Length: 377
Image 1 (cartoon, rainbow, N blue to C red):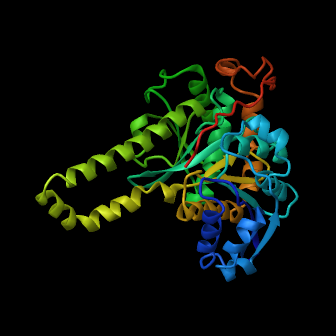
Image 2 (image 1 turned 60 degrees about the vertical axis):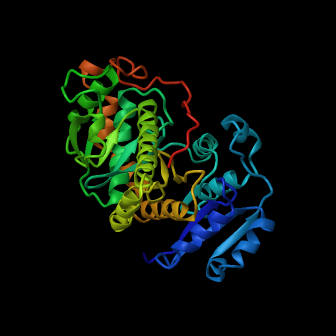
């Protein structure tokens, strides 16, 4: 990285803010020496923390505001009353060009509502989506949507595929990502109209910047055979919470098993190094950073309950996207072949599963974005 990169931080967002925000920012400085920060929040709380990290203090500008968005605030309330909140001011900094990305561990629904209102969506994109990363047998995979859009039509899913592929390129270094649609089976006749229609639209695109592999099932999520898994926000959020719950269950059962007797405790000591590697491999903190794709600016949502390690991981995601010029890449994709495919879908799916597509292929959607207030790791 050669040019200075500025990140706007909602220093008051999250269960352990502002301490974990300051510590997370300080942690990445040795690896990213040209990153600077704009910190928005209560100066009385943040300034003493900055004094503990002289290097960070020299590369951060603190902008005071006493207002903050609370975890229990409704998105509509935060949008109306939170104009001077740390979250809103951090988003505004991106809109004004003062920062290249915003990172917040605050209220998910409020962040989505504010970011969409301030940054707006990119041309060709109807609804922004929440995306994050899953550990797999072969590394990591991108999955979206994870809760921003409970109901989606075929065009939404195609847009998610394009955005997810670009995120895989930026954050995972996949130059031609493999993209799959999450379905109840891999056969072409399986699934609802929206999923089948999205598959047909994706197959109709000429020379896409990714490889569409067709349908994938739930047990394919962790296999690593695809780089991007596309689904609606309802299904994606259920899959996310199921994975989180399964990981917690396995951890609890393993601890109970190793504590049963002296022999099992001895076995734990013998297997300690291997278990430590396993823990690090599936530690959700290292996959922290839900990306709000489709906006005219980079916005990253950190898990609200994370610590400085997880927040640092979210900062790295924002840095990767800014360095790879993610917004410009997505904009370019939607000005080419995808714009044609979405404007003039194949006759067989012009109406199926696409409530927002009229008979002439034009967008007639008028419903607002449905926001599910869900924590995203």
